[in-house]
Amino acid sequence: MKYASQQEYQYFNHFAENTGLQLWLNFTPRLWRRLLEQCSSIEPSLRHLIISVGALGKLSVLEAPEDSQLVFARTLSCKCRMIFNDKNA
Image (cartoon, rainbow, N blue to C red; front, side):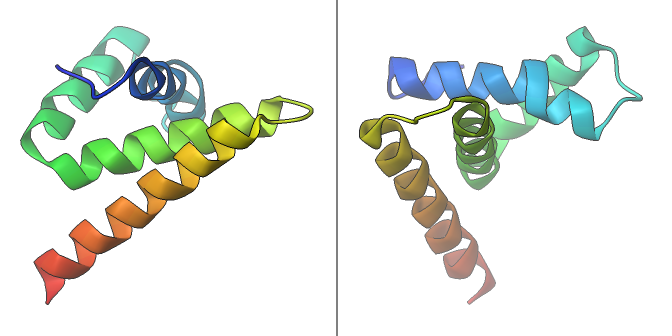
């Protein structure tokens, strides 16, 4: 799967390896990652959501998040809302 930036890749990984696994404990890490990659390659809004939640999850473990990380997470969150609203209009 292609990512627009190194940041997107890092946040996707954070969700796949930490945040997401905490939510769905029934999956093995390998299966979980495979499902995320397959589903998010088909549905861009899901990919943006995973990256946004991963960014927020990563920010929550940092004591003082960098401004650029916070802006990135907010931007992705807005993109997700726009895509979702367009599909449901």
